[in-house]
Image (cartoon, rainbow, N blue to C red; front, side):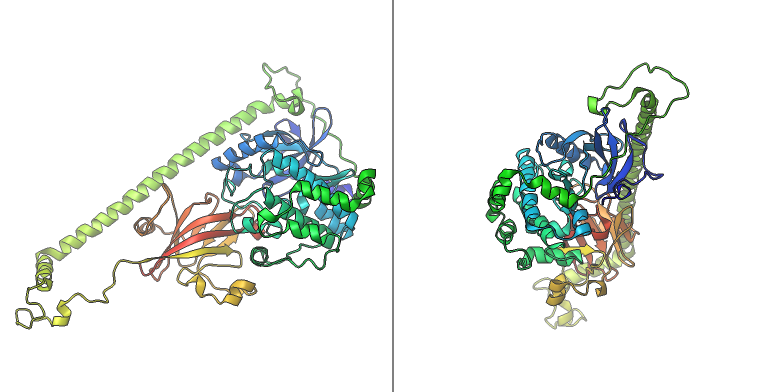
Length: 560
């Protein structure tokens, strides 16, 4: 990571040259929430601009949550954080700007030089714990603390991406229902969609410190299902860690959040272990050895010279740090507004078409059902009514049915209601099911009937068969099936067998994109066998498609 070309990548054809007045100089990378670019303030100070991915930006609920998180993150002031200086949750697309930290991430540093020495890990834990104090004091839980979100500056670590983490007390999921976090660094309560608190970040700090000391994730790599299972159900093996680090990391990784160390306790413990070095300020020397030579940051991008120098009639005023240069950007403002107007118009039109289509579908299905009932009634006619009356009278108590009187040529057994006659389908609820690229779902099979070793070890995921598959491409993830019908339930929650039947009567799709799905979304599925299932999404994690997954509660009506 000493080579500037490894840090600063040239802009590509699909990268914007300008974001809200910030001229982009290079691409820094990409993550689950969007792309990150290098830019500069008017005074020339480097900043990192994160532009949110379109599929998240199109979700109004995400924008509302993002707006709340920006307000909370702007309150964070800490020596070991990358300060949020500007943002716009209503931008097209939404974006935020933080101070740029010149230095590799912990993940890059470990990949380049291997495990860090014990003193460096102690300085790392103390710095990150102090950053967490500042973040938690602002009412934020990071929820995605990991080696790639810890940057190593020449004077110590910096925690980033707290500006897009969830503000405390809002909900345990993101606005889109996606579980924020990376499987290898999740806490047990996070992996099982439980309550997320400040102690969740402490667990992630323990995992991050263990990664720095070992050079690999403490709970191993591989399939995310297996990693999350080990995090939730198994105690970590700390024996490979240096003995000096084990007690503190063990406290951070306590299964019970109440038993984990606090950030203040972590700072004090690290200071005691560092001894005189802590008071002598030996940290910078350690970081210079870890980070290596400083990389030269590219200069600000010069504004293009306009063909005609004209003065705008009005200038949109922004905060000083984000104030765009006058000549190159005043022409862009009307185009931006026009693009935003066209986008809003397109969205409103599409919504109207969608609602009209849904209304037409429901009306058509209702008409079909009424037609079927009417046809059945007319087909039965008087004879069927007579047969029905005869059957009722024959089976009534005291009617003589089954007495052998000879008034009916049916046998006594045939005249009595059968004790084995099928009743209405019974709803069977199952524990949450898991779907990812290697874990399809078969609604005709009881998930609890899967062999326990297979469920526990998860070694044969790719050999498992299932009718409902979780598939992702570069743009989005979806549920797909070769045989089953799949449809989303819109409107009030609480779908039933009848409502699923109604929706599935007019359905013909074997695929369901998950872009519009969120925690609580309901999905109806009908298998050719007649089984109907209702899936209620608990967690949707599709920000990183390569490790994406969905968990859902499942209710099945057999032969419905």
